Amino acid sequence: MWGSAHLDDDLAFGTTRFDVSHGLIGLAGLGRQYLSYARDHALEYRLMFDTPWPQSAEHPDLIRDAVHTYDILRNVLRRLHGESAAMQDRVDLDALYIWSTVHGMAGVMNGNCIHRLNLKPQVLEQAIEHMIKMEELGLLAKH
Image (cartoon, rainbow, N blue to C red; front, side, top):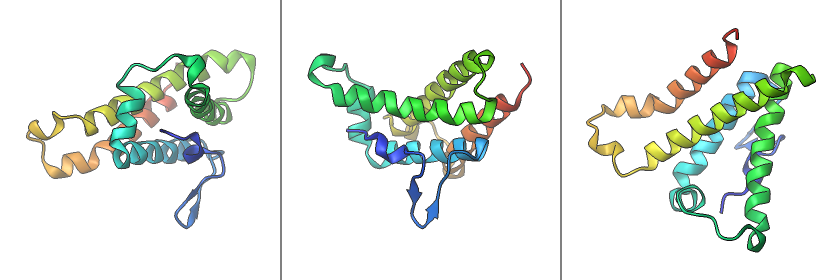
């Protein structure tokens, strides 16, 4: 199953160190890593997010990993927005937006329909980076 260790704060990506304290750069790297995992482990990803979970009491590791992964996202957003109580709703709303967008993209890219949409190969190759850029624009917008 999906292990949140793939997203820990001082995660190594090949030979490059990744530090989530870099705001939007950290979020982009986090998104790329998450989507790479979903692509490379499509069956595990589908089992985790496309099937009903078993009784939570029987699988505490599954829930712990999901919460830990979401908390990593929140921590990056706190570094971006600040840790004041006034920003907590913004952090949670942005986290939900990013979480749902990334999961939507993973589902689409791993789904059975994507290759029937007659998309140019370069569109598929650019899809994840385009999603990340659109998320960045949304995060930078004044509310």
